[in-house]
Length: 452
Ligand code: SF4
Image (cartoon, rainbow, N blue to C red):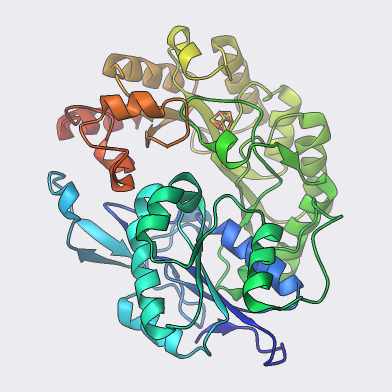
């Protein structure tokens, strides 16, 4: 069954949103939803459009039954089909798969729909563009007259590549929901119902998670951007301005999904959730605690460590955070000035103590450590792992993916054994692209074992 809204008059333009397949060596749904695409869907629906959604990564059938292994807190595996590895990655001794529904199932879902007036496709990681391109080829075949718009992080970071190779009619680079809606208005000639986000920037229509077959969790975004400028991170490029929603609207959105759809797990997608805590996270946490909602909260995007005061840690615990991830990146603090300025050794020590005193367990806490930076000394990574474990926190090795438009990009290009500028396929962190000689399987296994 296709998720469509049938409550709109048939002369209202029909917009199809598609979350494409992932082609990769590995993929797992750790609270990964196409929030931008579904937010645009919410905005367009609010303006009167008829919206359909096909999620190629759908983990549930039309009756809400899981079709692949379900993990903790709403996470889970995708279906997958082993496919031929791209020729350029022939040297990587691993199997390559297409994650998500099969091609026939995708075609059936398309042919069940009336021809859309516009099709919006997203692509998240830069090296996932093959899945988006395959989707675009198929929709072109089924709906040759429907304009296809490609957006998302890949289209923003690699817009030249996307324009040249994607086969889309338009590549939307770094647009807000309202800006995409304006493009769709222009294409369809529809003026909507006159509603716009103007005047309510901190309380936009909710993303259309209700169009999924099931809602095992909901991502929450309380703000965009980050005031820091870390050398390895694309946040400042993707969101040059740091903006916030009102805490009261954030709490209301959590309450809405919980009460109306029974959602228990919420994943915060923010890059800077704890910044200016007094005016942002503290009122959000107090609001959640006040409502006594039976929810579980998660921060797959790392939290800043510096603002983790005793008060913040205690309120995070009382608000039922179950997955807390810290953006540590390295515990070799004397060398980190070239990478970022976001945390020092005493601050990490203090944050770790505050979290433990607040009641968080080893299983709930994790600190990301970057693995695979250009020129990285493995000995430093081993030392960082031991420092984190000694504080009672789980080290989590986060494999570095080089990102265009970041300060570390040029150094990554020089360090790589691949031509990173020629093809985003080479940005894939599974292949440790910033080493002239890839780490041996033994080295990777040893480091992972140490982290456990
Ligand atoms: S790594 Fe974190 S602190 Fe640094 S710029 Fe990105 S979001 Fe901000």
